[in-house]
Image (cartoon, rainbow, N blue to C red; front, side, top):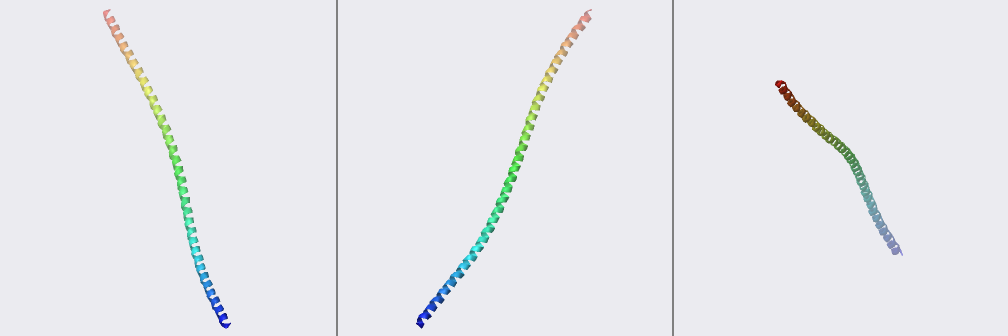
Length: 124
């Protein structure tokens, strides 16, 4: 009976030591998980910052693209206006040349008439 009690006690001590070792292992695993969790949260926070920075950069790039497209449209309008003005100037220049040619022809005709008048005057 005394042996039985001693055996029970030894078994309980061994079981208690095994439970204690298991508790130590579980506590170590809990601490490791806590450290890993903190690292994961830090990584997640860093990723959120990177995403926010990328979104700001993308927004800025989109704004710049709109500005460039607006400037391009303005330049195209100005170019079109300048082309139209150039065409109008060419038309005006052509009309002036025509008027000049008509004027020169008229002058030439008048000179001919003046010669004829002078010849008629000489005859008299």
